Image (cartoon, rainbow, N blue to C red; front, side, top):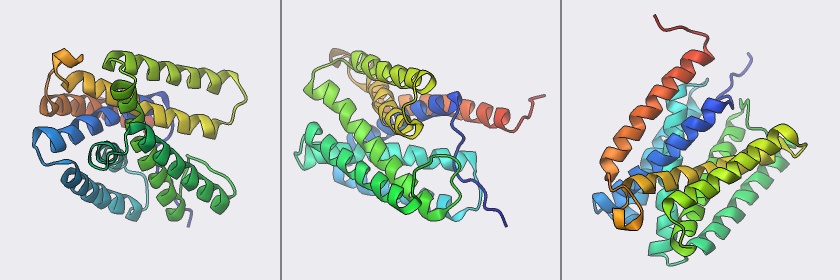
Length: 248
């Protein structure tokens, strides 16, 4: 029996949803650690348990389920926020060192993936072992993106809006290279995947941080709810479009 694909098709809407998912990951992670005052280590444990449960379900099902897939993506962005903050604020490594560690870990996973499969592909994925490597790479990519985004704002001193503009510029360059160059599309995919994370994260910070720090001070809970509602609408639209259905 032919095995079914387990991951989302890469389209323009995929990247829009990915950015919303990263924004939710940033605001939800900050809600646990800051708004609720749980602390970075405890928040990391809680979000990792929730992520692990959703991932185990994702690995167990036999085909692609849109809602479940994006729930796991949100899990990786939320845990990624906590990992980045834990490395910087609890372990005292700093965002630059944290980014280097996460980048090295991501390269190692991609190397193992390449050796195991004699290549890397992001769609379709039907093998559970390959899917496991995919989700590890996604988690590390989102953690790296978080650390890099925080590096731009905390270490370089850029405002959240300027940080978002820089990462958006990198994403635009990747899109141009995708369509008008012969650079490996797998490489460009992972670059885009990494940099959509700080773009969404800086947008999340723009929504939640105090006005005197360059944010809009909307709070983590309202920002998370608003972003989640918008993301759900786009996911439903994308699913309808993907399946060729119409709304009556």
